[in-house]
Length: 82
Image 1 (cartoon, rainbow, N blue to C red):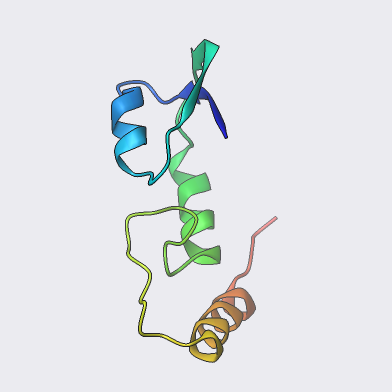
Image 2: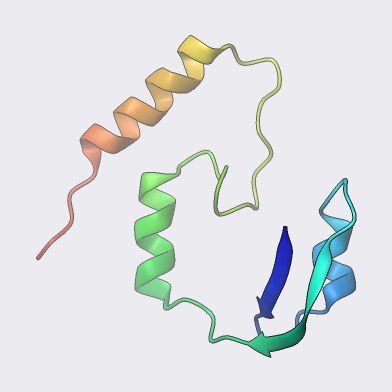
């Protein structure tokens, strides 16, 4: 995996601290704008356990069926106003 961009104020070392492997960094590392609050809210509704967004730990005691049920319920309750 190669890191190509960072959010403003985030250092490569901070990203690396979350990983258990050595992160490769692009020689053309850039900065990208962080997501809008509305985008974060949508992701949080799609990912209530914080697996993709982060900020919450995954319950290692939870079996797959429990995890799947939580994700299915979150997906079914999600509505995106268009």
